[in-house]
Length: 410
Image (cartoon, rainbow, N blue to C red; front, top):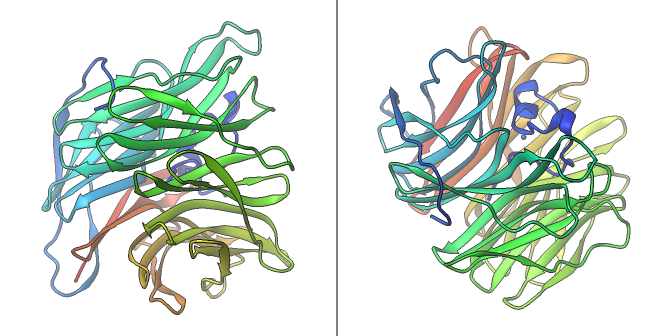
């Protein structure tokens, strides 16, 4: 599903990848302390016609500069999204929001030091896993803090926290995204290495009792990181990422990972893929952006079972930078993608929703609430009953943002 922060390597100066989205740049598997929910709720207005409707998610009391990142919906009445805030009083923090079909509710998440959650997958209202990284006391003199993978599991009322294994010698490890085809079949991907300047690939597999590291071949170009993963079946996962040479993907067939190349559009550079969604082993869509001629353009790649094919989503008219951060497909001819568009000079920046109909990608809606100059959509999740949730942030300025959610119902 979606990855909240992207393919960038984790550094101590920018570990809070979820806050990248706030700034508008281009963000049941173990035991541990549980955290409950907040009574603060926000009810959505009733939809009067098919289409996207704005929602007013509640915000954690006493916080500022909030944003929603990754979101996963197991049905039209069950979603969970990971949120962040950043203000002088509380510093950086994370929370979650759950959707029950009529309202969003704020949920606290386990907070044991520096925790950053990037990806989430829900199979039901009572079964979700969120992945990321957590800071611990350093033991190898790179810094005073090591970062190790973390998995938080939601059972509908409380969280538990697990620490997946850490590759030998690594001091900087993060899980960027997670995908589950069942409660005993999850795959998480990310990056790991001996320091912030030496990333390597990381994949971990959950098969019902423990997380185990999987060997992943690395592209020869170096500097490879995995940003997103989708698993339409227990023996079929597709992960996407970038390296110094451009884009690449990894294909899991139930026994091993194999590298598969991903084309960059002619004349393009600086490409990244931020999200991938698969409805079958031979049907996937990945989205991101690339640079060409001084502008940033949206990018989509389609997997047909043997190779990736580059597509050309629509750029927003008048924007010099359009990028897609998340994608969710319910069939080979029905996908929704979310992102943002603006100019290199600064605001206004708008949230963007694009739709794939089996033939073309087209802009479905631009989102900028009245009175705002800044908005972006960082996560999206659609269900087979043709309901979608898109989440992100909006506000009058880059350093003054609030939660944004839109719901699509047919």
